[in-house]
Amino acid sequence: MALGQSSTQRRPEHITRSIPRMLAAQGPSISFEFFPPKDDASEAVLWQAIRRLERVRPSFVSVTYGAGGTTQDRTVRVTERIARETTLTPLAHLTCVNASVAELRQVVGQYAAAGVRSILALRGDPPGNVGGEWVPHPEGLDHAEDLVTLVRGLGDFTVGVAAFPDVHPESPSLEHDVDVLVRKHAAGASFAITQMVFDADSYLRLRDAVAARCDLPITPGLMPVTNVRQIARMSQLMGTPLPPPVVTRLEAVADDPEAVRAVGVEIATELSSRMLSEGAPGLHFITMNRSTATLEVYQNLDLAAAAPRP
Image (cartoon, rainbow, N blue to C red; front, side, top):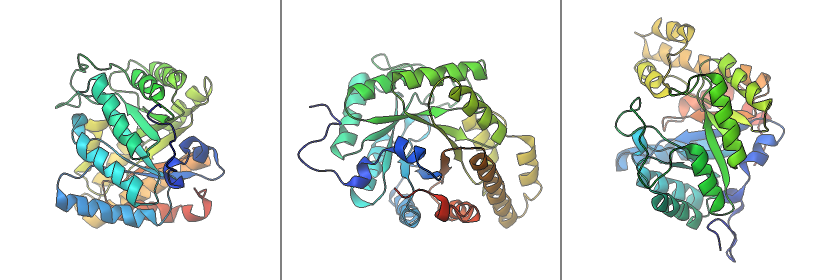
C-alpha cells in the first residue's frame, strides 16, 4: 500500500480536507503559516497563537522549515501534533535541502503516518546562506518539480508549491518563473503559495501569466510588518528589495513602535483587499508565531463573513 492511501483506520475529516477544493469554493480561503519553535518557551508561544487562530476556522495551516532547511525534526513534530490535537488541516512543508531521496521518502512516511495528506514541496534555500549557491545533496533532488513527482508517486497526496511574484532570486525573468510553475503543475502540483507579497501588481502579473497556460490557483502570502528591523530581513529572504512606498511608510514612523505596527497592519489590509477584489483565491498569512496583527487584518477585511467553511 502506498504511503498516502487510506487504511482501515478512518482519518479525521479535518486532516483529509482538500486544499484545492477549498481554494475553488466561493469566498476566500484563509490560511496561516507558522515557524518551528527553537525551544520549549517559544513552542508555548506558538501553541498560544495556534489556539487563537484555530477559532477563526482557517482553511489550512502550515509549519515551515527554518532558514537553510534547519529545524526539520521540529517542523515534522509540530505538524504531526497539529494533525492529532487540533481541528486544523495541516499543510506539511518538505524541502530538498541536505536530504537524500531515501531521507525525503522517510519524512513523507512520517507525515503519512500522522494522516497528513497535503504537502508543500520546495527546493529550499542553500543552507547557511540564503543567497548562496545551491548545491543539491549527492543522492537528493535538484528541483522542486522533481520533489513534486516524488511525493505524488508515494501515494494519495495533494501537493502545493512556491511561487515568486517578484521573480526568484536565481531566475533570469518572470517568463522563466512562469515556465517553472507550469512544469510544477505538469508534475502534479495542484496549488501554489507565493513568497511575501508587498506589491499587488507583481502578484497579479504572475497569476495572470500562469492562468493563461494552466489551471494552478496561486494564493498570495502576506505578513503584517510589526517591526522596522524586519524590513531588511524580509528583503534578504525574498531576494528582492521591498517596494519603496512600503519602506517609506514604515520608516516615517520608525521611532514609534505602535505606529509601525499600525502602519504594517494597514499596508497588509490594503494589499489583501486589492488582491481579493482582483480574484485571488485566498490569503496565506505568515504569522511569525504571533496572532494579534494577523487577526487585526482578518477583522479589518471582515473575512469571518466571507470565508468558506471547511
